[in-house]
Image (tube, rainbow, N blue to C red; front, top):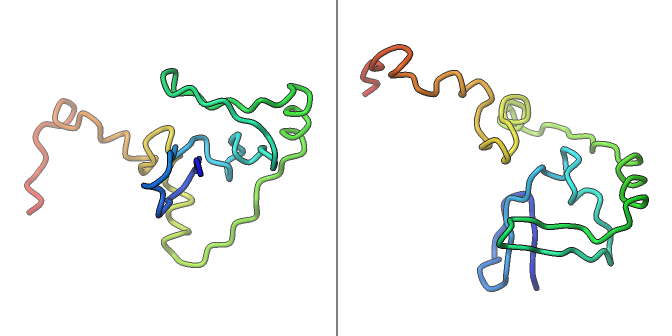
Length: 113
């Protein structure tokens, strides 16, 4: 059974899988708008997955979509949801980009070991 997902998945090695689709459904990505029975065209060469849904139907779904209410169950979920960006931009700490090219901007960092 082919599988497309926007989060961690286990047991997908025996079937064709597209993992880490982005933007994630919790952020309003296309997976949130798909409904049972929708057809999806996958173009691996172009790196695309397109829902074969009429434009007006898709627009109506998008207009009706509301983000899920997320309740943090651990302090780590709280931190992650507020500080980590989407997979499309690396799934890293949002403020970490200020440390790119640190050697060029600040010289060699101190030894941390």
